[in-house]
Length: 137
Image (cartoon, rainbow, N blue to C red):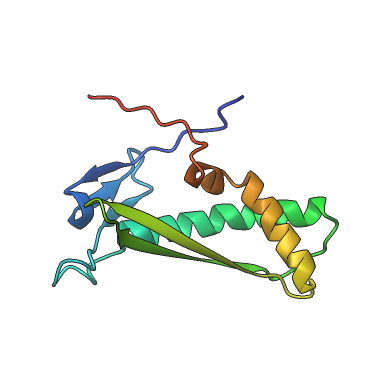
């Protein structure tokens, strides 16, 4: 395995705070749909995840289409991320991925999406295939 690059972000104030990268390319004040008055202040973590997942998965869709011999143009990927309270006083995410592949038959689109789901790093992470290291600073 080879590390291609490392992205880093620092959160302050949790779900109602800020997120910033050390290089300042990302600097966001978060909104919180669960806290009245803060819901429209900025994006929430699930919205940021939806954006990142849709972009990453879209790249995987494009790669899968090429590998499967499909010519694609003007494609879109929509990710819907839900925050769900579970029965153990915790939370989970649920994700729906929607791909629009104009000119590609439905069954071929399904094969492309399935292949993309096998290679997309975000999809792998949600299957538990990402290495997570916990460090106290």
